[in-house]
Image 1: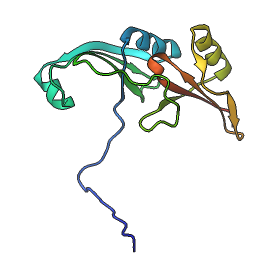
Image 2: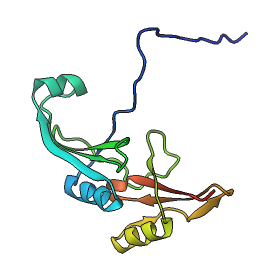
Image 3: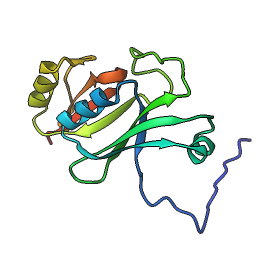
Length: 156
């Protein structure tokens, strides 16, 4: 007989999602992409030293960071360029069904205009712009560094 476990932590609860971190090779291009998409640059900086090494479990970390935020102030991305230590590159063309965090989604108005603007800047749809029932129009776009961005326009 399978056992179901329920764990309750009475004095600890998640308050909110703080941010999603995305490691990139070209921080400027990634930041520009998300700002052009409509996110707001909140700040840029660097991180290095033993405290960073201990948090991420690596030695000799030197990183540049940019935070971008959705206009409503509720969603943030941390874009990180590691200068050291070096790392093997990932698969920038990994399909949407590859294990791991695969995409970040944004609600947009006028998805056709957003897609046209992204195409004008060199981005392409991964699949097609489709309608989901009478609720949404959706698509996946591959941004810089192979980041998959889902766009969702609510229609119903």
